[in-house]
Length: 315
Length: 315
Image (cartoon, rainbow over all chains, first blue to last red; front, side, top):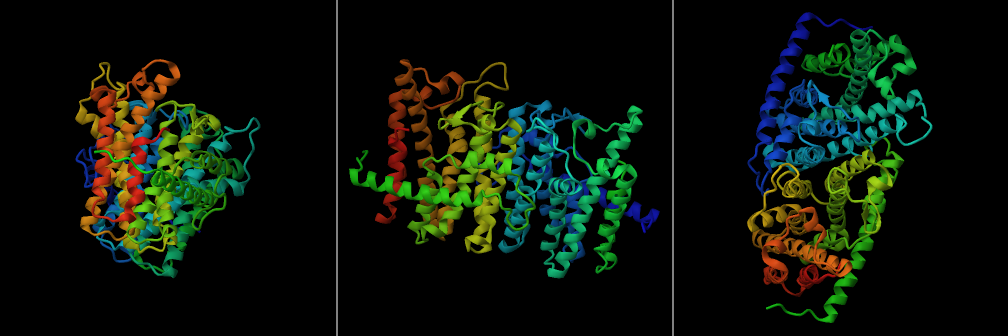
């Protein structure tokens, strides 16, 4: 049963998202200054500008929101979790810069602005992505977070596992393979293969955003398990909602039901479940995410609202 | 005064380098297996194969050698420092994979084998580089190293600072700029600018290889300062020797003194100091590296030999 969130919880989530996004933006601004940090020699202005172009483009900042809200649920003040959240966002931004490259998805625009390789050039975009990825680990490892070394290194490991060859990067690789890039004969993925691909490509980093918040809050094994279930269900909700939005936006804007993703041969669950089946699956996953938080009280309302938002968002 | 190393120390260094390279190769083999690590979902075979192509191509493995030998100087057994050394090597290998890309240096061959984007394709090479970079931090953060969280997180931070926008990646950016990529009018670099570029592009990671060994060994402030001076002088020696080798190889092979780097407009100190001046500077830097180790006894002989090797190597 999908429960309808009240107008109030929507408004409350919007306000919290906006407040968090502003705080993330301010912190990213300062992390991406031209002034070298201790141990650095010089930050080349063109590289810094390209990194800023890729990281300061606005957006909902959902991943740091998840980190901050999960940490807050476990008693960690928002300000204390913000740096770890910003690290996850830097990693997300690097993945967008590299995914947009001509050799990858070859996108000229993102959020209505030129992508980094269009605004600068391809070499600069590759290096800007590399530097954003490296900076993410630098920020997590920095004693500025005031966390112990044991906690900081656990966060580094969590982010590395979620984003590397067995997580996000591996998922992007599977996605390119599903487009038929590497074979003469395109191989249609099974439902299980699509779910796994999406769990890697987008799910792993969303789940890591939650896990990093949980580890900052010193979650015990039971809380880690519940929050992990929440993060994975939320990640799957997010991806299927994205695929549905893509189909419906194309249908509305172009007067036809052919999706951009479908044109590109991207693997989505819509092809397997149909549009209506995909919507039911999206709502089921969103409610599973909410259900995973049953052991937490009203302090988890923001995370519950985020799971419903992931299913119902319009952009 | 440049002291001539005995035949014995050369042979000893060669043996130690070979022994270390074999141990690094074995460890990288196991880190780059197709079996997912804990927290990973699946390692796509094509991605793993491309990463292995980029990381298991042999070579001297100088960076892990510096990490292991510095740690050994401070009483840490080689086996215990090997994982941290392998992490530095993974990071070095990622930088080669990305530097070879068409949008960057556009190289088809490395060590006589096709580069990763030639053996596979450009998208796979970008992702393989991203995954090698991420794996480097994963390996440093892994409790498998048996180091405390405080130590592991210090190593992560050292590697991130040395390789990010204010270190290696920033240096690569400056190098592309020095080729005149981003300006209609090429701007000739001053000697100070060339030294800074090289300190970032190659020096920072070599110095970090030493610093990581020093931190594994719990070096005190005085030892850290001495080893840092050693690492920086060694890095500068290595780069200038590389530039000299490039000029002399071209002169020998092509019957003319025009270097490949000069053709590409790469900034080297030879253009400023001349070939003979560059050789004197190379030897001066190598001796400065040896001199920085004066406070250490014969246990530092391998590091001294490495500094002389960096100046005198023929390939």
